[in-house]
Image (cartoon, rainbow, N blue to C red):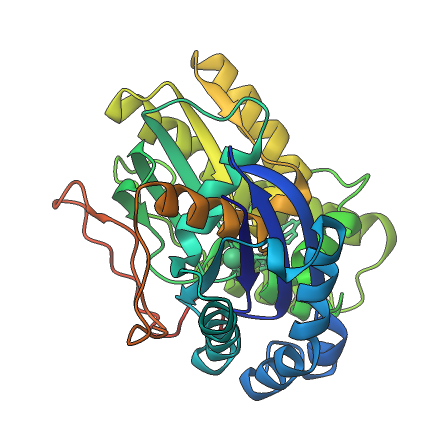
Length: 352
Ligand code: KG4
Ligand code: ZN
């Protein structure tokens, strides 16, 4: 089975092809960053229009090297969570292709897609493992018992980790999206220079909270409005350290608690070099393996959607034409009901 994957849940317009395995064949991504940068965040209406303008071309680029759309056996598309208008562009396109070609289509959960990026590796993670999904809208720890079998272990009470990176970068005037820019500004900085708060770090619970970090950076900046050079690098390195310290500590704690063999990290923040290094160190120290996908498969892409779709199709699943998009679509039920997930955000993942 050759599967075309489509991703339009937020501000990346992406298409990819996977063959049996799932094995990655092509992976095309168009980032809308430049269209949203002047607004300092994703504007839903702009995102939808950009998807409409770009999607056909992106799909053509993805299928051309494999002999065109005629060679595709099924279409997998992100059906949620995300921006409704943006999701509709991809889902309607997938249904159109399925209808015209008489092939199945399948709506994929974007979060399952992030977790499924690992399946495209030469040596994918074994089960059970803990997945740390860290993106612009999500910070979740899952027990992954098998493909399709997820239990939520914990999540953020307020801001997502990527959101924390983006908000601090905005405070510093680094630009948008802020995660990668803050990482770059942190190069050469001392991560121990400023002791920013690590909320819930010592608590046994697997919940996170990042909103206080932004507040404390804001008050630090009020006293030192003109940060530059070494001081700016120190601040960025210290913020980055505060975020990745908590993420990696809780991921390791989660793996130990459920008796998993290791930790797989996914989502845009997994592109962060310091998170990758610290998580690897701490996993090794705890006798756990650590899996981090290549960066291009961490940030939003359609290869991960095609991979998850291929897995579901190979189990005989597909969707009917009455199925449509959904802005909220949690992955898995809470495993430990004593751990209450108090994510007060009602916005979908994609809204930052
Ligand atoms: O998974 P993703 O591409 O989109 C969502 O599904 O949200 O994640 C985007 C998030 C943004 O918050 C971005 O700032 C963050 O991932 N990010 C990073 C890095 N690259 C992207 N955060 C820290 N360090 C990076 N290198
Ligand atoms: Zn994502």
